[in-house]
Figure 1 (cartoon, rainbow, N blue to C red):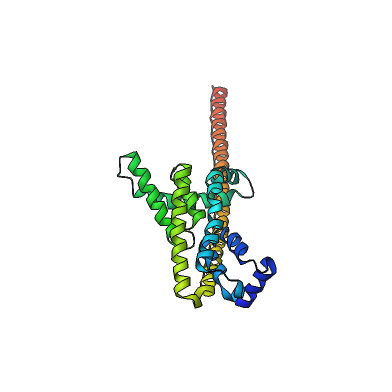
Figure 2 (figure 1 turned 120 degrees about the vertical axis):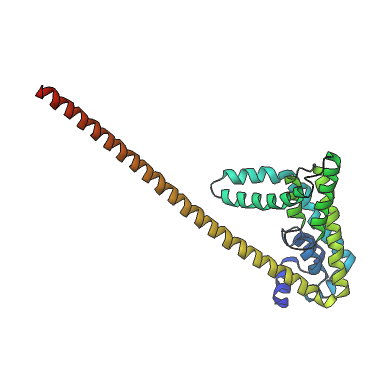
Length: 254
């Protein structure tokens, strides 16, 4: 597997491990936590592998480039997705995931009255969230959460970048102390990403089917209510007609 991945990187980037580290670190989910092991892996690059400092700086550059852009465009993009027919459900899913993380942060400061303290606590919690080098706790998710909890642009960017630095230092430390696990660490990140994406797709498909079934059931219920209403109206009309007939018969008999 290592040779297969190394062949892919070599065919795309040649011997330019630094460029590969920057670009790979820009991708969501992989980010810096995957970019550093890639840059430091001798299995992938041989003598062209980066040292810890180089891998850290290039991965930090790549992963941080997306932060200010994402902080500016996240809300407009989500609103646009939710308005489109094709990506509407995806937009709601992403929005719900971000709101779940932001609700966890907001719940921890609900008792705080000072607005300034609330902002500082939000920044610290966002920093801690990004500083943990796990999937879905990186700069992409962190930046979106920062927007959702109402941080200003610079507050969001600074908190996420500082957290990203700590996460990068942790990864570099692990790769430097255990160099034989550098490539394995990247593979583990890939496997976790594949599992998460697979589970996410399955959940999305199941929820889509459930929503379609619920919509069909609602339509059936509405049709049933309409038919029941029409039946009641017909019964009422028939009852009135019978009353009219009785009145007419009584008048004739008189």
